[in-house]
Length: 198
Image (cartoon, rainbow, N blue to C red; front, side):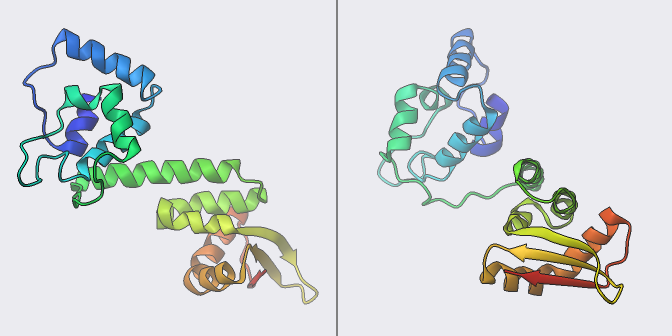
């Protein structure tokens, strides 16, 4: 928890963690944050997005300390909207950006594995996630593979069905080549024609 606080907030108000603070951190982690580092990181990012909580608001000397932040009452006040969030730009270091990108990729991969889609399409989406990043790859959830095989002219074709005309047009225009390459790679076969339908 301390390391995540340092990554997201950027400073620690104590030079060492006392036994009392360690106990309080453990209790908060289990009770308030349900033993989830993701929930804790999200909470730290909420704090980092607030000028007031970060001690940057004029006419006040308040600054959120770790010992204050882990109190359940503080958590509830922040979630209830007692403090303005999002009025401060949060700049992530390159290391933080890389970690965040990796986290989003893993999250997106898990989402694909849980989707009721054609197994080959899921494999293609997992490959695409590594190539285009997790946030972009989420759009591919709006597609599914409906046909992969030979047509009447004995050409190897793939047909994808989109959830809406918007996604059909957008994904076809922007990612058709990447999608075709991914399908060819996972199927080890050249695709002569890739079509998108609604």
